[in-house]
Length: 313
Image (tube, rainbow, N blue to C red):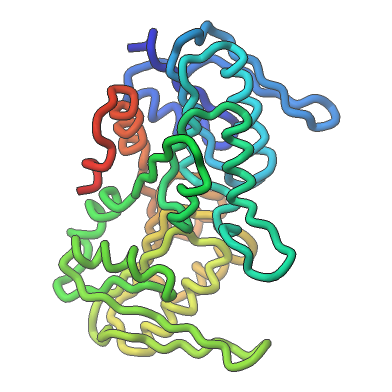
């Protein structure tokens, strides 16, 4: 199998790439990524990849621009080394929140990232729990959109009591929360956020019955954790028994860790699509689930031309 497939890693998350390679029972591809004194990225592949299907595992997490540039340079390196195919495996797709123009004279940067990946030479892209599913339409190469749902469900099912509620923290996440509720046999609730005026605190209206029930807030990422912790507070004020959170990508920027530590949330379940910050490990409220087997199985199926979507039926 090693003669036809090779897994490479950038500096963003080598531990995840190692676990994926281990699942596929192949050694991690030998490559060196370095920077010149002025910060320019340089990459060198240390083995023959001519005709080989190559997969570059690189979530574009903080520092986003450095990791994105590493990915682009690695793809270009493999293209010029005559790789058979090059798949960018981006468990976390940076710039995904800039998926449309929110005001005049603003960019659609997730489209720009798509153009850069294709220009560099990516023949396929794999990502997980995109912030906006329509990002797939920015690509003219195959795009496999994976979901962390099976990993979360295995953990949450034995933990939640009957009558639990899956909660969408905003209107945009209703479809995601509904999918979890369906598979967990739970009820669905939606938090409606309204700001009366600028610089006036948000008013939280909850659509659905949460009193006396376990609630799980479902989201694709935790960034500054403002929405998450405010939602948890509103649920407890409405009589929720316990509040958990499940979010695929632990971005955790700014005051996120302090907010979660001081919040009413009992546990925040995340995945290892991006490395968890060391400070978060000391909080005691985070549970990290690995998606390496899921990503590894998806890569195996892509390589063997088998169905990927059947992983999520």
